Amino acid sequence: MSKFEERYGRIKLPVYDGSFSSYDAMREAIPGLDRYFKTDLYEHWRIDIVNLVKYIFFMYDPKSDLINEYPDDLELRKEVAALDAGYQKFEDKFPEFVTEIFEFKDREVVEFILQFLQVSKNDVWREWMMSEQELFQLYKIRGQLHENLSIEQIKKKAELGEQCKVIITRIKALKEEFYGDNRDLQDHTQDNLIPVSPENVFEVLNIPAADYKYLQVGDVSK
Image (cartoon, rainbow, N blue to C red):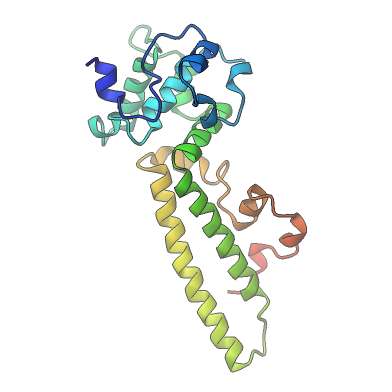
Protein backbone atom coordinates (compact mmCIF):
# COMPACT_ATOMS: atom_id res chain seq x y z
CA MET A 1 0.00 0.00 0.00
CA SER A 2 1.42 3.39 -1.00
CA LYS A 3 1.74 6.31 1.38
CA PHE A 4 -1.05 8.11 -0.47
CA GLU A 5 -3.40 5.15 -0.40
CA GLU A 6 -2.75 4.65 3.29
CA ARG A 7 -3.32 8.32 4.06
CA TYR A 8 -6.19 9.02 1.65
CA GLY A 9 -7.66 5.63 0.84
CA ARG A 10 -10.91 6.40 2.66
CA ILE A 11 -11.70 9.79 1.07
CA LYS A 12 -14.74 10.21 -1.20
CA LEU A 13 -12.89 9.78 -4.51
CA PRO A 14 -9.40 8.43 -5.34
CA VAL A 15 -7.93 11.73 -6.52
CA TYR A 16 -4.58 10.57 -5.11
CA ASP A 17 -4.43 7.62 -7.50
CA GLY A 18 -2.54 8.82 -10.53
CA SER A 19 -0.61 11.70 -12.05
CA PHE A 20 -3.07 13.71 -14.11
CA SER A 21 -1.84 15.87 -16.96
CA SER A 22 -4.98 17.99 -16.90
CA TYR A 23 -8.32 18.35 -15.18
CA ASP A 24 -9.86 16.76 -18.28
CA ALA A 25 -7.77 13.64 -17.68
CA MET A 26 -8.69 13.72 -14.01
CA ARG A 27 -12.41 13.85 -14.81
CA GLU A 28 -12.10 10.94 -17.21
CA ALA A 29 -10.28 8.81 -14.65
CA ILE A 30 -12.55 9.68 -11.72
CA PRO A 31 -16.30 9.55 -12.52
CA GLY A 32 -18.37 11.69 -10.19
CA LEU A 33 -15.73 14.35 -9.63
CA ASP A 34 -17.83 17.14 -11.14
CA ARG A 35 -20.62 16.75 -8.61
CA TYR A 36 -18.39 18.21 -5.88
CA PHE A 37 -18.00 21.57 -7.57
CA LYS A 38 -20.85 23.67 -8.94
CA THR A 39 -18.38 25.85 -10.83
CA ASP A 40 -17.19 24.28 -14.06
CA LEU A 41 -13.56 23.72 -13.10
CA TYR A 42 -12.90 22.23 -16.51
CA GLU A 43 -13.11 25.72 -18.02
CA HIS A 44 -11.51 27.47 -15.07
CA TRP A 45 -8.44 29.61 -15.68
CA ARG A 46 -6.26 28.23 -12.87
CA ILE A 47 -3.26 26.31 -14.20
CA ASP A 48 -2.98 24.48 -10.88
CA ILE A 49 -6.54 23.16 -10.92
CA VAL A 50 -5.51 19.49 -10.60
CA ASN A 51 -3.34 20.26 -7.58
CA LEU A 52 -6.07 22.43 -6.12
CA VAL A 53 -8.71 19.70 -6.39
CA LYS A 54 -6.34 17.23 -4.74
CA TYR A 55 -5.56 19.72 -1.98
CA ILE A 56 -9.24 20.30 -1.21
CA PHE A 57 -9.93 16.57 -0.98
CA PHE A 58 -6.82 15.90 1.11
CA MET A 59 -7.43 18.81 3.47
CA TYR A 60 -11.21 18.87 3.84
CA ASP A 61 -12.56 15.38 3.19
CA PRO A 62 -13.82 14.17 6.60
CA LYS A 63 -12.25 10.77 5.90
CA SER A 64 -8.75 12.14 5.28
CA ASP A 65 -6.22 10.66 7.67
CA LEU A 66 -4.52 14.04 7.90
CA ILE A 67 -7.20 14.95 10.43
CA ASN A 68 -5.90 12.21 12.71
CA GLU A 69 -2.24 12.78 11.91
CA TYR A 70 -2.36 16.50 12.66
CA PRO A 71 -5.34 17.00 14.97
CA ASP A 72 -4.01 20.15 16.65
CA ASP A 73 -2.07 21.89 13.90
CA LEU A 74 -4.15 23.17 10.99
CA GLU A 75 -1.23 25.02 9.42
CA LEU A 76 0.95 21.91 9.30
CA ARG A 77 -2.02 19.91 7.99
CA LYS A 78 -2.41 22.42 5.16
CA GLU A 79 1.28 22.20 4.29
CA VAL A 80 1.24 18.40 4.17
CA ALA A 81 -1.94 18.39 2.08
CA ALA A 82 -0.39 20.90 -0.32
CA LEU A 83 2.82 18.90 -0.70
CA ASP A 84 0.88 15.69 -1.25
CA ALA A 85 -1.27 17.50 -3.82
CA GLY A 86 1.81 18.42 -5.84
CA TYR A 87 2.62 21.95 -4.72
CA GLN A 88 6.31 22.56 -4.11
CA LYS A 89 8.34 24.64 -1.72
CA PHE A 90 11.18 26.86 -2.89
CA GLU A 91 13.89 27.68 -0.35
CA ASP A 92 11.63 26.04 2.25
CA LYS A 93 8.72 28.32 1.40
CA PHE A 94 5.56 27.86 -0.62
CA PRO A 95 4.89 30.36 -3.43
CA GLU A 96 2.60 33.25 -2.56
CA PHE A 97 -0.36 31.83 -4.48
CA VAL A 98 -0.23 28.70 -2.27
CA THR A 99 -0.10 30.68 0.97
CA GLU A 100 -3.08 32.65 -0.31
CA ILE A 101 -4.94 29.34 -0.53
CA PHE A 102 -3.97 28.59 3.07
CA GLU A 103 -5.12 32.02 4.23
CA PHE A 104 -8.39 32.06 2.22
CA LYS A 105 -7.35 35.16 0.28
CA ASP A 106 -8.53 33.71 -3.04
CA ARG A 107 -12.31 33.99 -3.00
CA GLU A 108 -12.80 31.45 -5.78
CA VAL A 109 -10.76 28.86 -3.91
CA VAL A 110 -12.86 29.45 -0.79
CA GLU A 111 -15.99 28.92 -2.88
CA PHE A 112 -14.56 25.64 -4.20
CA ILE A 113 -13.87 24.48 -0.64
CA LEU A 114 -17.39 25.37 0.49
CA GLN A 115 -18.93 23.65 -2.52
CA PHE A 116 -16.93 20.55 -1.69
CA LEU A 117 -18.12 20.58 1.92
CA GLN A 118 -21.73 21.18 0.89
CA VAL A 119 -21.64 18.00 -1.19
CA SER A 120 -19.51 15.82 1.07
CA LYS A 121 -21.60 16.84 4.10
CA ASN A 122 -24.85 17.40 2.25
CA ASP A 123 -27.10 15.98 4.96
CA VAL A 124 -25.60 18.35 7.53
CA TRP A 125 -25.69 21.29 5.12
CA ARG A 126 -29.35 20.80 4.21
CA GLU A 127 -30.40 20.37 7.83
CA TRP A 128 -28.53 23.56 8.72
CA MET A 129 -30.22 25.53 5.94
CA MET A 130 -33.69 24.18 6.80
CA SER A 131 -33.13 25.00 10.47
CA GLU A 132 -32.26 28.58 9.50
CA GLN A 133 -35.51 28.70 7.54
CA GLU A 134 -37.48 27.37 10.53
CA LEU A 135 -35.87 29.95 12.77
CA PHE A 136 -36.75 32.80 10.46
CA GLN A 137 -40.36 31.62 10.20
CA LEU A 138 -40.62 31.62 13.99
CA TYR A 139 -39.06 35.09 14.19
CA LYS A 140 -41.60 36.31 11.67
CA ILE A 141 -44.50 34.91 13.70
CA ARG A 142 -43.12 36.41 16.92
CA GLY A 143 -42.74 39.75 15.18
CA GLN A 144 -46.43 39.78 14.38
CA LEU A 145 -47.30 39.62 18.08
CA HIS A 146 -47.19 43.23 19.26
CA GLU A 147 -48.27 45.16 22.37
CA ASN A 148 -51.52 44.69 24.31
CA LEU A 149 -51.40 40.94 23.91
CA SER A 150 -53.93 38.59 25.38
CA ILE A 151 -52.81 35.98 27.89
CA GLU A 152 -52.93 33.33 25.18
CA GLN A 153 -50.82 35.46 22.87
CA ILE A 154 -48.28 36.08 25.62
CA LYS A 155 -48.04 32.36 26.24
CA LYS A 156 -47.68 31.72 22.49
CA LYS A 157 -44.91 34.30 22.21
CA ALA A 158 -43.06 32.73 25.13
CA GLU A 159 -43.41 29.29 23.58
CA LEU A 160 -42.09 30.60 20.28
CA GLY A 161 -39.13 32.08 22.14
CA GLU A 162 -38.29 28.69 23.64
CA GLN A 163 -38.61 27.03 20.23
CA CYS A 164 -36.21 29.61 18.80
CA LYS A 165 -33.66 28.80 21.51
CA VAL A 166 -33.85 25.09 20.67
CA ILE A 167 -33.33 25.75 16.97
CA ILE A 168 -30.45 28.16 17.65
CA THR A 169 -28.74 25.44 19.69
CA ARG A 170 -29.32 22.96 16.85
CA ILE A 171 -27.89 25.39 14.29
CA LYS A 172 -24.78 25.89 16.39
CA ALA A 173 -24.22 22.12 16.55
CA LEU A 174 -24.81 21.75 12.79
CA LYS A 175 -22.30 24.52 12.05
CA GLU A 176 -19.70 22.76 14.16
CA GLU A 177 -20.38 19.48 12.39
CA PHE A 178 -20.22 21.13 8.97
CA TYR A 179 -16.90 22.88 9.55
CA GLY A 180 -15.34 20.20 11.73
CA ASP A 181 -12.16 21.50 13.31
CA ASN A 182 -11.53 23.96 10.47
CA ARG A 183 -12.14 26.94 12.74
CA ASP A 184 -10.15 29.29 10.52
CA LEU A 185 -12.40 28.49 7.57
CA GLN A 186 -15.47 29.03 9.72
CA ASP A 187 -14.20 32.34 11.05
CA HIS A 188 -13.39 33.52 7.55
CA THR A 189 -16.56 32.45 5.78
CA GLN A 190 -19.57 32.29 8.04
CA ASP A 191 -20.30 36.02 7.84
CA ASN A 192 -19.33 36.40 4.20
CA LEU A 193 -19.93 33.35 1.99
CA ILE A 194 -22.01 31.01 4.12
CA PRO A 195 -25.60 32.32 4.32
CA VAL A 196 -26.13 32.13 8.04
CA SER A 197 -28.60 34.97 8.45
CA PRO A 198 -32.26 34.03 8.01
CA GLU A 199 -32.67 36.45 5.12
CA ASN A 200 -29.68 35.05 3.24
CA VAL A 201 -30.90 31.53 3.78
CA PHE A 202 -34.19 32.40 2.10
CA GLU A 203 -32.27 33.72 -0.88
CA VAL A 204 -30.21 30.51 -1.08
CA LEU A 205 -33.38 28.43 -0.94
CA ASN A 206 -34.89 30.53 -3.77
CA ILE A 207 -37.78 31.84 -1.69
CA PRO A 208 -39.24 35.00 -3.32
CA ALA A 209 -38.06 38.27 -1.82
CA ALA A 210 -41.65 39.37 -1.28
CA ASP A 211 -42.04 36.64 1.30
CA TYR A 212 -39.32 37.98 3.57
CA LYS A 213 -38.18 41.49 2.63
CA TYR A 214 -40.97 43.27 4.44
CA LEU A 215 -39.81 41.97 7.82
CA GLN A 216 -36.12 42.37 8.64
CA VAL A 217 -34.55 40.44 11.49
CA GLY A 218 -33.46 43.63 13.21
CA ASP A 219 -37.08 44.77 13.38
CA VAL A 220 -38.35 41.69 15.16
CA SER A 221 -39.46 42.30 18.72
CA LYS A 222 -37.64 40.16 21.24
